[in-house]
Amino acid sequence: MDIETIQKEYLPETMRDMSTEEILLFVAGKKKDRQKTTKEFEELTEKRNTFVAEKQSNDSVNMLDNAIIQAIRKQAVTKGFVF
Image 1 (cartoon, rainbow, N blue to C red):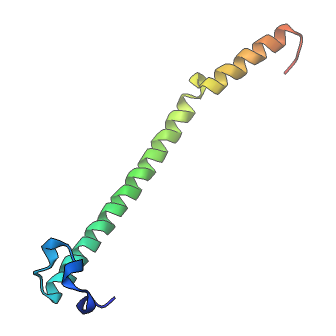
Image 2 (cartoon, rainbow, N blue to C red; image 1 turned 60 degrees about the horizontal axis):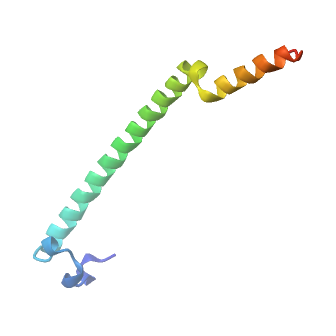
Image 3 (tube, one colour; image 1 turned 120 degrees about the vertical axis):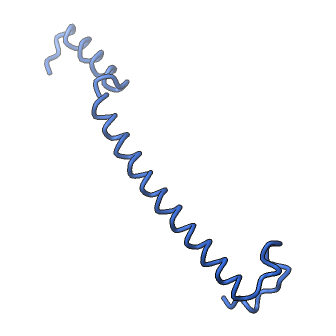
């Protein structure tokens, strides 16, 4: 997209008084900020996924599905089923 063809009224209020060079620098700065934020988000997502996986493996004994399975097994053994 050619920045010179964009009409000034379509730009945000803060950018209307900028020269073409200033607009290009402004957009480049915003792009860099967005890339940095995206990278931070991806790193935090990875840390979160690792944390959740560790918690799930550590707490697997206390999870609801495990409790249900244990209760069913206990009842099945009293009825004569063997696992």
